[in-house]
Length: 495
Image (cartoon, rainbow, N blue to C red; front, side, top):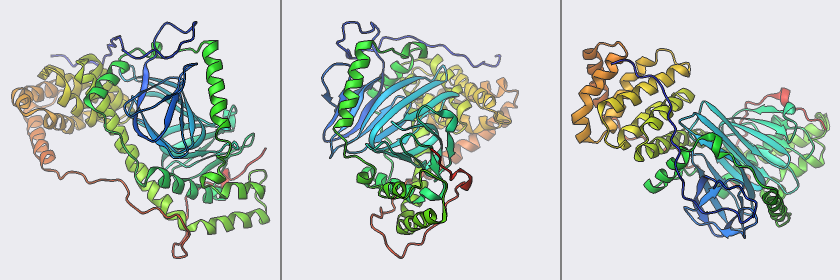
């Protein structure tokens, strides 16, 4: 048998969803849902076009251009089709500007506008060709493999700190002024100003994660999808990326603008100060966001850093939890996406998506082949071998050296994920096909796979990697300030 090449076959399916607009001149194509409400506490509303706002319930779909708002005592988690999630705090508002995701094509574009309030974003399944952006009234934040708590004030200020990965931070409409924020560093921007990052805003970063941990909990929640939800998302993920982007009609644009203005007007008291970031107005009043730091301004910065030193424990814990949550979300998203495509019998989509998953992030390869092995309908040796080969091809495209060396682990992992009756029938043939296609000695490859199968089967279950450190909300003198690895060269702000 010749080596199975990576290929893509995208099926167009009909997705049954509710009509989203009553505007007479609305586009005839129905929108694809972008995700669903994984958690809703108290009153959370969604508004589409000129239709009346409706209460969002758990498992409700969310859509392109939807405006989502929470009441002062409400929180929610929105989970997107790629497995990414956005936690939404009380008295907050956001819009879903764009979500295009087709894993077989290797494409993802995700744009959200956080209008006001507190949020915590965790990225999902990674694609070779992807763009993730969070806009605010004053900033544009580019996400790269991140867990990102951020707070947006009704006064126009934006403050964020990636607790995993990194982010680019630019004034809204001025991408040339972007600065990169590394894990654990903080970015703050005022309306019309330039980004401030570095030690001068260390106190703000501590308050951001403390706010997030108070509002959302110390541990990032990773939503668990039902089989029905995975199937529904998989049908949407099959739709070609070119057909997922919808244009708003003039009437829809006006309705959206009106709803956005109403959401902001109802939350005028949501300044950063009122959301727990008292350091921001103090730094602003001292002129820290306007000029380079003078000795007098440095005294203000040092004083705030001292005042918030007790909160450093929250930042340290958030860095640990953010990294674990980001890695877990990538893998959970991969399993859900591949598992969903497998459940609906889209073998071609599974093969292509597995390759793209492995190319984008080698850590996603095993999750993809395991999900395919566990969920593909009427699985045979040729199909599973094709999935394994696509993972190896994806690793090679992603720049992995000798991806064939990882075939032993991937094959063993896939065989472990198979239902036992299926494994008894096809395991030997799978090993033979994979070894032959990659010019490997079949007997040696089989011995290595069987040894790895036993090792994987006897591995203890991984413990919960997320953090359980209590949240510190009041200063305690016993906590010593820990230094942050920040870039002083970026500690410059100009109007």
